[in-house]
Length: 188
Figure 1: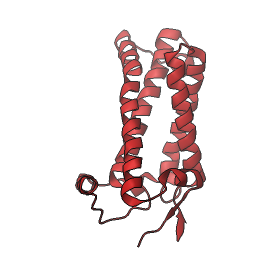
Figure 2: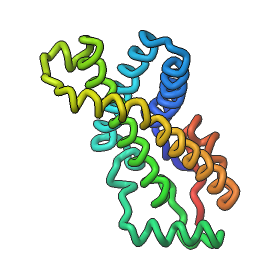
Figure 3: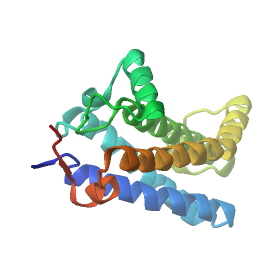
Figure 4: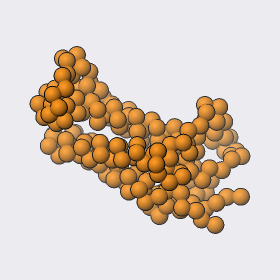
């Protein structure tokens, strides 16, 4: 029997974020600053909407459904190493939930530093428009974070993709397909 796990909002958010982050990364690498800035605003809107949805969304979209104690994360990690899973998770696994939070916080740092950087060095964007003062020290810190945090994000994204493939191999689930149609099979 199948159950709708990834609602339409989560699926659209996920794939929109994949496309937007990839495009933002590439436009930054190749000097398309205006397009990069526009994509940053799209990512910001996606993050804000996902945070709201994390509190009011469907069962498996809510943050409360994938907050686990450290002991559960360690237990899950050991189960992965041994390929001996005693528990089945319809939504995010303990480590999968932790990865969602890591990626969301990383992206929040990225867009926040980008907005500060725009206001500080380009005299544009909401920080500048709202006349929020940015000290030289904060501006330099935002610049450093915005230029170096993408490296951490690429690591997290790579770990996420590896985690998905490990879960596919160990559980025999069609996880990538479920992120398109939303359904997962219930295990007994």
